Image (cartoon, rainbow, N blue to C red; front, side):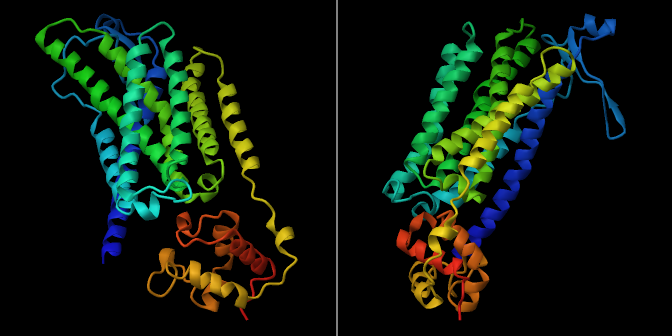
Length: 398
């Protein structure tokens, strides 16, 4: 019953997380587009009111005319929308999903004894520390260098180094699948913390000053904008990390930390292309095609690098029958893929079921080496090779 309820919790939390995540990322992408696409106002009244940019847009059969004020508007409207629930809901649902999926069963999903033989409590504490420590270091970098000369470049370079160090540490402390997801959770935590500790408080201060008739300090807007820009570059790396658990050829690689860094770097470069593309359309900057080329080149290099070895030639010489591999399945696989527990709907406790799932077994146990998960049953390389020889000989079960 516990497993059944956890599956429902996983499903509903994942569904909620995707919904609110779309809302947050969508609003973030829209405002980046809006800021990059504003043009100086033509209407004299708008200029007098302090409008610095405007945009005319057509969507869903209607015309829209958003404007941006250089500072504070002449008068605050009665209803002012705040963009924060999307961020908080995304983080809360994501953390709850991380709790249910990984922290609830750390020995299964978080710990790989071949990487580091944690105790469950130690692994949980270390995983939570990743979220907190990265935020503190990232925030310290922004506080120290964010407003200095060439501050954005300095912050960007140091944050890149920090992410690389974190990727190396995570993949050398936790199971590959968990390490990738933990990196995404780490960046997403910093994104939401930017909203909670900087963007929204700064905006509240600006509104309070306006209501009290005090001059608005532009530093709050500058800091909020800086953190918002950081969030937009974190977005694609976070999305990759969250999706990576479905693609074991990435996190199961011996140098998975380099794979993770490469994918995150490619995502940030491609995001830069789209951010600058809006300005290029208005003649504000050169065409940013170089960023897209760099991102795609990194992806192509990873595709070539991660290409699995051709095991057919090396595994073909021996004609292995089902009788020789059946004990391996019984000892290493059936406890999770048998009558009592049919993980992912796969059974390997009969010849018919093994034959039906032979391709999946070969892919997961031999090519990608992701099963058994974290090698909990201790399958050996010799046993994996035996499965490969059986599969290459035709995966016969008679």
